[in-house]
Length: 265
Image (cartoon, rainbow, N blue to C red; front, side, top):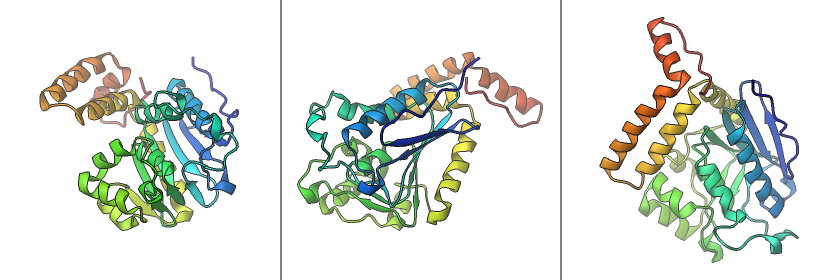
């Protein structure tokens, strides 16, 4: 039997594991609009590893404390000089950890999301914004090269031309355009953001999360491969799920005309 893990020892993050298996992670540097410092970056990576390995954790929601979601890198942070500078070092390793998280991830964008804060949101599977959210792709406006995998995620989310236009100009992305382009799934009043997001996360947590993981792998691989590669990946996935308990439960529940009770394995 798996045991409940503690999610209490993180700098600049408040983390709660809820009874339905949803992990709610709140970036907690509100005085800096939750800008990244070194401690927060390392905390995010450690959290992603813990959620990945925790059998009780079935979905992850990321939001921000106060008025901001995340305003990107804190250029005034005292520990900035100690941040890794190579792409293969931990400063950016968490990007891949989040992109490949084998459980559903949702960004609840409650306020300012600028620079790397946008990158964080783009790496999640789903984005829901409050009406107070501001989406600011500021890199090139400040003569900074885009990072946090934005040059990979954004064109795949909204297309080549729109992505470059937004990055060139660096202006606020209108929330209505963000929604119609598919960048965000929904825009809701600020006082309903967390409730709406947690409701969706809870729904996903009740699903066959091991199957979600394989489907996500297939989708990510399909973004860069040929249709033939996609066929092979889907065939592999069909064979793989035969070993999953939830596959048997899904068929059994259908035959018995009842709601399935998935365990995520």
